[in-house]
Length: 394
Image (cartoon, rainbow, N blue to C red; front, top):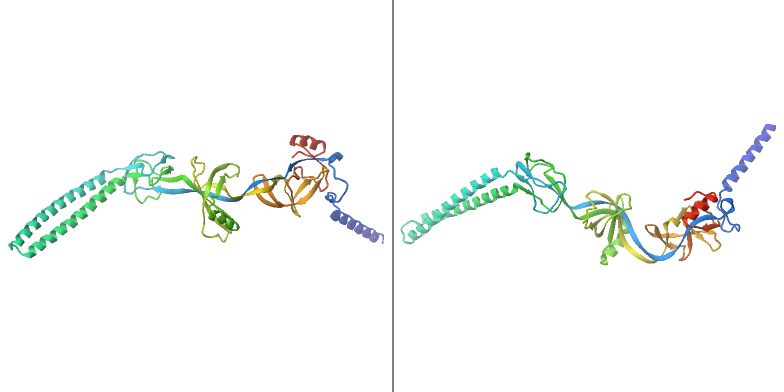
């Protein structure tokens, strides 16, 4: 019987403890209506840093992960088969369109050209003789000295020789073209890559790698995706005649590499990602952008004027949503729910919940509760005060 009584008593004690733990936590935040302010360690006000909400302009950006794309890229290949005699470029060199990059041995092609020219001269002589005979035959036919068929045959022979001469001229042009093709030239202006073949090797028109790759990087493009929900806002600005600017940053999203302009949007949405591709153009005169480089792109859509601005460090998030700690006149803080607008760097626009001139806590919020007594300090002063109050510096 005694064991049963002890067991019941233990169960009741466990129930009381559970109720107290779940409904009365030791660190429960003080309610705003509590009259007694919450103090820091040692009964002193908690040192914090604060900033004042102000009115100003803020840029509205759309961020996206992008890839740098060359304006044009071409693999320079041999257009005739032969021995590569000379490499006339340096790897990484910037060249103009038409610059000679390499030389193939032209002698076999020069021989074929000379043969074609000789055949052309021979057939031109035959044509000239046939025309002279035709003139004589026409005079004799006019005097009724020869038959009309002989004149007709000679006219046909002249036409035949003229066709042969035309064919010979085409052969000469083709041979001359092959001679010209022994000089491998740049098909476009740009930057050369690493050479794919050395002098002394036989090159062919079927070589996959070619001789070198030339890439046009001035100007250069960046392709990045933006959410489909942002399309109406972007198109509205574009149709209004605005030139939207685009900034690109490195992988760490801190260093700005270049500033360019929006060119166009793709004509369809990717149904898998719910995004649309956007193309921007950059002058790239300093060559900070490199083909196939991954960058962070920021498209500036508009600038909002007279917005209420606050530091992003002041924004707190909890189960009740986003909020800030507002500093009151009695140096206590209260929790204020806010609605956020666009963010630019370390500044955020506040749509609702905050007024110009109100102070918000930006540092030292880790131990704050509604109604807490605070002391606004500078960073150096807060470090000293935090040590004396039992707080670690932020």
